[in-house]
Length: 86
Image (cartoon, rainbow, N blue to C red):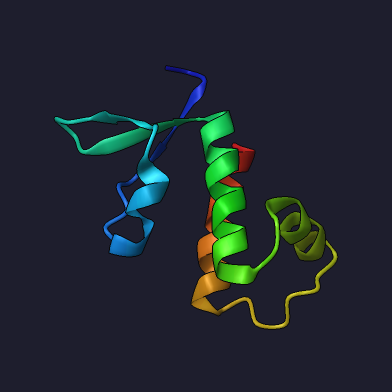
C-alpha cells in the first residue's frame, strides 16, 4: 500500500461521482487512491471549480497568478494538487 494515497471520504453530494473507481476500506471509511487516480481527481476538480485543467492550475499557481487564495474553490483544488503531488 506504499504507492497509494489516503483521502477522507468526501461528504459533498456534488462530488460523489469523483469517488468512483477508488478502493474503500469499509471498516475505516477511508478511500485509497493511486497516484494516477489522485491526479485525475485533481484535474477534474480544477476543471469543475475553476474552469481550467490541472496542468494550467499548477502553472498559474507557481506563477503567483491567483489573487484570492482564500476562495473555497481555490482551496479545494489546491489541496487536491498537494494530494496528487504526494
